[in-house]
Image: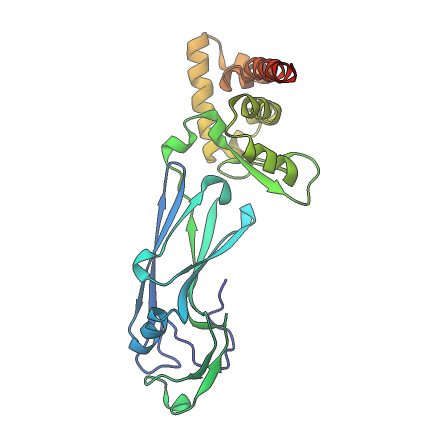
Length: 289
């Protein structure tokens, strides 16, 4: 994140007047949870015409830095029009919360930087501000992720698949609103590339999700207090209750047969994946002919 209290060798525009007599920068962060992602809009106000001119001339830009530590996501976005500061993130890019910071970033060297509103200590002093240095900064904020009800209506949506370049196996972590599945980077890349192929993605979902969901269901009855407030837990309880009603079985039966329950919740994905594999092999044999 950009540092508000950093030691800068030149005047910095802040939310309060420090290096400037009257000039300030203010930001309002607006977060909205979407069905398939998250939107962040920022309303920025600057009351210094000389700095506004630098932005207009594209010598300085609005820089928005977003981090989601639990998803190991970090990215910086640049804008020149304050009315266009809007960022949409995918569901699999963020987990639990995001940190948002706004600054003004210098895009080309400013050799004789002056401002009529400098405090007396900087009055009549010309200084150089180098490219990629910060000219103004706002206090960063943390926004808790809000997932719309639709996001977790389907069992597949309780999972969040994440690539990990340092991993050579598949692991899962239930300590988030969605169950975090970490996979080796090569597998994650292949998974994303396969989303346009129905047979491939069904097979991959079966291989990845079925054993994890079986394990989760097996642990749910003994860890209810630990996970009761997690959205994935609420989703599974609702889905299991629906299944119990449809199949006229007891709750005990559902939890005593976690593999069968996982199969039912994933709509018999293992059978479907085998049929998909059969179709892929048949198509491959046809191509060989």
